[in-house]
Image (cartoon, rainbow over all chains, first blue to last red; front, side, top):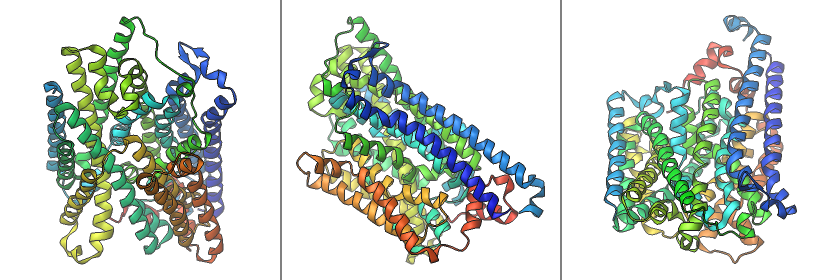
Length: 96
Length: 503
């Protein structure tokens, strides 16, 4: 397997991880800043709960699990693409 | 004294020992002991990871902090869960493919430096013991509330059970024990929560006493972001988390396991908030007192004396004990593994053979935190655990992330970064505990050091590596191929290497 191919796989996988990490960092990490700049937002009630409590205490957990599911799917697809590119596992003696 | 609670604690303890004993009969040798022969399915492994991860901090500490300080403390459960996402995105599959069983293993496999390995060993021991301390203290606290006996009884009880279980059962029994304890903990926190909510509803939904500071999701911005950084990045550097990953057969299943863990852990963390919020109504006096007892005391306070309160109180006590037993079990297995391999195994005892060495290490690894827990008092369970996360995030997280994704990392760079970032975090942690500074920005930066120690560790690691770039390991290309290529593409040579672990 060529060095260039491995570099390309790493670049693609790291890009995917960084993009998903950025989405989560903005969505969750933006909250302290948002509610510091918009204190009235802490009193907005949605579904009987104050907004930050609903977002952090309830919705953040399915959000994180969903991000994990999306990442696992896409990372496996990247690996499958890579495997197709370097040849089937049965031929690894000649490509490796 | 609640007789049901005592019975429940006894049952959990006996069940732990019994499942451990069932594991012993299946143990065939050291590789069984340490890695459960890697025959554990993703779901069973995920439940085991969840069981091991949900500690005294999650079961008792989070609810107490929410009761006392409100929404800004929701960052603890959110961060504890998000740590698994960071682990999944940046390290899960490559780490499994590295074949490393412990963090010092990874250091040596990736950077081929015995000195770096020794440094990593010291940090594993510090983080492991620092994390075990609040588990044992939580056990003492719970035992005192349930029985009225002095705290040291609970400390010695949990310490002895876990030490015996690790020394004579090892990792395979731990896998069964941990998976069982995840479901027990979920049941023990969820069922009383529903009864408490029903009670609150029947009482005509009394208003929850709130103020602006309690409702807001950030106290100081610096402290909040520091906590976020520590918990998001600290999980991947905890010694007991990595060992559990090694029980996955390959990188792909390590990823799937982590995804299931995210779901299981997130489900659990929906419930401590219920106790924290309803505690404002039924146990307001705990907000200014021993807030980490709210989960244990709330059922009796809300439901009034009677059978229901006793049974639910027994259930939460059982869940809390499951938390101490399972987290201590995982931590002790890892600490004992590193101690046996990197400290005792290097000395005169190396002729003992792996099994007696591991057992001796387990006895020593258990005795240290027991002694500490008996000597030190009055630390908040969640905060001490938060400090352990800060040290892990400032030492092992940068080493793992750069080691997996950057060719240019050198052993000198990794060591300098771990010393600068992790070392500063250790100093800040000890300073906060022994010489609490007066409130202010300095106190925030010492109590929650991750905001500056994590960037410091990354910066030092990268710059020292660049300065020593001629010492980049020559085999780095082959190593990165092994970390990132799916197992089906590994040549017989790399395959063989990843099967061979340094036990």
